[in-house]
Length: 246
Image (cartoon, rainbow, N blue to C red; front, side, top):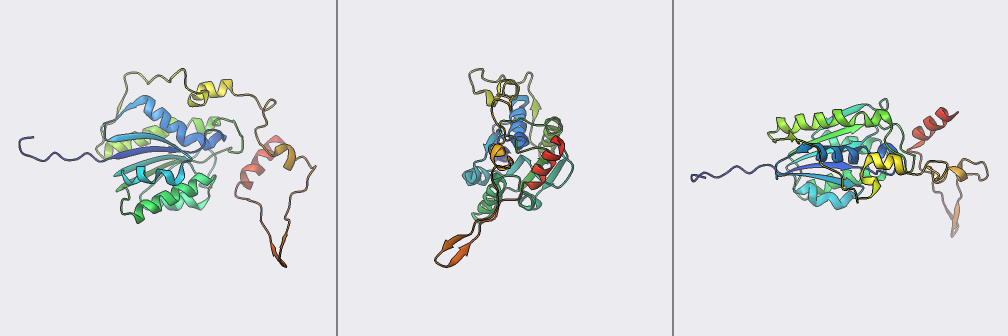
């Protein structure tokens, strides 16, 4: 280019993390799917469904100069609240109140990338406060689904502010009709079995039936006792769900 060195475009990773099978836990993946369907980006931008891969994403993060993450985050706010976090504050929010194991995993991804000397220069977390996550086979609740569009708008504005040329597609990408139904939120919601056919909470018929008593059972280990506590970090969601049902 006339002897001038072309400026390298920053490598951008737009990442959705979460689990489509657990209701609002799928927000990050659904958001990144919608982004890819509707927006065209330069070759230096990678749009990726990170699912629950955890530390397996470390090389993807190391390669990124700019990272945008969509996820369901427990901010302790009303369900459906959208909140944007930037820079050094992102790992703190990923670990304050986890709603699933993938958040701890992604916190480790960022720590590993930093330890290896390849931490993104720019980092944005676009998170939504979930309403329901203990609904196996469930889809996004309406309040959460309604935040996909605002989340995309925030991501586009942020990327453009960073000099990334993002433009709407003339028509959204078609979803492969031969792909699994889970890849298309419309098919997923219409084709999945109802709760009367497939129990949405795997242990509901056991733990909450009254047939069994759930508690602590000390194990004798050569005269010393080990007690394993029940995981209680999702109690607030369980409590809210049963209060609604009552």
